[in-house]
Structures are given as structure tokens and as C-alpha cells.
Image (cartoon, rainbow, N blue to C red; front, side, top):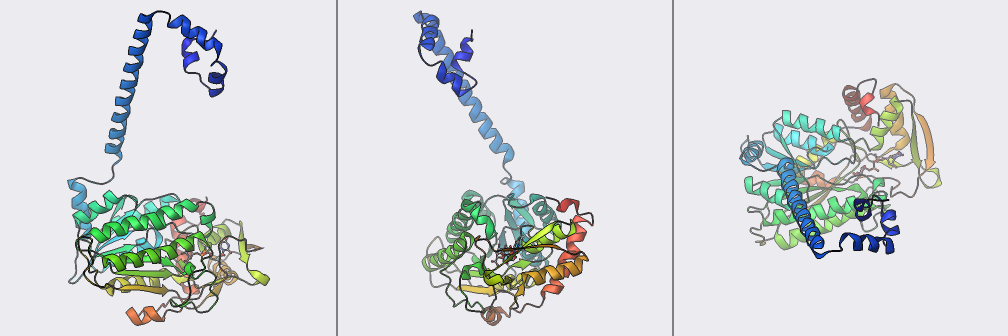
Length: 431
Ligand SMILES: O=C(O)[C@H]1O[C@H](OP(=O)(O)OP(=O)(O)OC[C@H]2O[C@@H](n3ccc(=O)[nH]c3=O)[C@H](O)[C@@H]2O)[C@H](O)[C@@H](O)[C@H]1O
């Protein structure tokens, strides 16, 4: 015969339902026959509920206390130190997505020339977080603090602006990747739209307001087939949700520029590659598979045409980011009120010479001295575009942007880094 405890707190929902009818009533009659027993039971249940609730609130506040990775006098001191400017006319920059690929390189370059840098990153697991941790160590070793937190945490952002009057924000935190948007669409909305708005809200209220430079994407050109892609071309036909969120970002930042006088520069990056890169990108995953003897899948476009990308080396992108920061012009607002017009700019940062994906594989084979096992398939309807090709004349005029690294040279540097990071036996690269 089941015990009272089993009757009241069954281990499976099925059990609970079966015993709900007459049998249950019989037990209740037996147990609560007298009023005094009922009273004692009620007291017992009230005490049980109260102690559960107070224990729960203790656990909650305790975990908040123990897991908080920011706040406190010591933390504020570290933030201030990291933001310290060490050159005349220098800037203090909040770099979001600092433990990401581009974020790491830009933070190092800024620090190296004497600017103050504070990083922010949520270390999510879109790709191997241990690579992000390694980048963080590299940054720490070079005097850049990376605060662990999410872009959507308005309190943390406001606190950072309380502690440091950032002159600039380099906003690189985002949900990247074109094809992953079909798997996890909401992560794009969370980071690229909600996170962007949270950041802009804090920036618009900051006093002084910072100037903002942020990462848009070549993917906004979508189905545009006029080449090379110019900033004046239409960008209203995105082919992926990723592209759509980046395009939305361009419109959203325009609003904040218009209403609040924030200085905004959007950079359309063209397939950035290089050392410390992103493992989800083709050049990186191809390298891993080639070294491990696994096949690689190469997509092919309509009429069996090869896909092509304007692959852009990270050092050229870093120069473009620093040039944008240096020429950004000031925000005009204060306390959330616009005082005049502020710059609103959008630039392509590409390489101006597209390379077909099979040619990328040829170059990797030469550098790795291993033949790839090629599996050529028709491009699935996954948001990919057939080709990209940047016209960079706007950026050239504004800050002398001129890419200097071709794919052959850039991939050589990437492969050298890859082998030194993962080792020849490539164990860490297995995933
Ligand atoms: O410029 C951008 O704005 C974007 O650049 C990058 O996107 P993409 O240009 O798509 O780069 P990437 O994935 O390396 O695929 C390269 C090529 O390999 C092909 N490709 C890819 C994978 C595969 O298995 N096989 C294949 O043929 C594929 O079809 C494509 O032709 C960033 O990831 C993105 O976050 C964004 O910043």
C-alpha cells in the first residue's frame, strides 16, 4: 500500500493523475478526520512553505553575490587603470566583443599606441570559449581588462560609464555567422538588435556622449548584383537573418544619431580572416579538416558557378577601425538631449579583390602541404550570397584606408598561427 507521502508527492505525474479520484478522498478522510489534526497539518504546511521561500531567497542572493563578476572598489580601480590614456590626444575606448576575433586585434592595437581600452565580452559558446579565454589572457598580458558581461546588461554598461568617461565605443559584440541564423534566429535578435539598443540607450544618456564605431557587414548587400558593392547601392534585400539584423542596426543607429546627436560610424566588414580567427568560418574549419584528413564541403552557386568572397586580412581591418575612430567626430548631445548634428557614416572595409572558394582551398593546401578531400555540393538555401566585392573609395577618402595583404600572404600568417596554437597534432582543434 502506498505511503501518504507517495500519495501526496508522487514521483511521476502519471501516478498523481491515477490516484486523484475516490482513493484519494478516502485517504484524506482518514487523515484529516479530526479538526485538530487538520490544524496541525495546516501549521506544518505553512512552516514548510515559509522556510522554503526564505531558503530560496538566501540561495538567490548568495549566488548573485558569489557569481557577480563586476562591481566593488577593486574592480573600479582595474577598470580605471585599463582605461588610462598614455599618449597626448589619446582616447579611452570601450570595446565590446573584446574577446572576439576582431575585438582582440583592435584592443591590442589601441593599447599599443597608448589609448585606454576596457573590453566587454559575454564569452558565449557559439564557438569554443577556450579560444576566447586564450584571447582574454593575451589582452590581460597587454594591460587590457576584459569585463565579463552581456551587452543587454544595462546596469553594467551604465556602471562602466559611471567609472570611465569613455570618449569612444568600438562596438564589435554580435552574433556572427550567416548560416547559423537558421538554427538559432533569436540569438541574432538578442545580440544584434536588443543588445545594440541597450548600448545606444546607455551611450545617449552618458555625459559626455561617446562617439560610436560599430561592425555592420558586407552581407547587407544581399541580393545586390551590381559590382563592386558601393555604400550607395541598395541594401534592402538581405539574404539571411544575420544580414537583416545588421541592416536593422544601420537603421537603428541612424535614429540615435538623428534624435540624440550620437556620432556613429558603421563598418561593413568583408569576410575577415587571420590569426586568432573564428573557428566557424570556412578558412578556419577547412584548415582543421584538411589537417585531420576529413573531407571539406565546398558550396557551388547557380549554374555550377564557384562562390567568391572579398576576403580581408585582419591587419587591414584593424587599420580601418582605428582610422574610423580617429576621424569619427564628436557626438553633440548631453544628458539625452541633442545639441546639433553629429556625423553619421557608413564604410565598406574590404580587400577589393574577390577570390573563389576553391582557390582559397588551393592556397591552404599549399601552405599546409596536405591535399584536401573536396566534397562539392550545390549551395543550399542557407542565406549565403554568391559573391562579395568591395568598393572602398569612401573609406580611402575619409581616412586613407588601403588594404595591403593579399589572400596568399594572409593565409600564410593564419596557418603559421594555427599550427603554433593548436600544434601539429592538432588535438585542441578537434571538435
Ligand atoms: O562579410 C561578412 O559580413 C560575413 O563574413 C563571413 O561570412 P561568409 O562570407 O559567409 O564567410 P565564411 O563562413 O567563411 O564562408 C566563406 C565562403 O565559403 C563558403 N563555404 C562556407 C562553409 C562551408 O562549409 N563551405 C563553403 O563553401 C561560403 O558559402 C562562402 O562563400 C562571416 O562569417 C560573417 O559573420 C560576416 O561577417
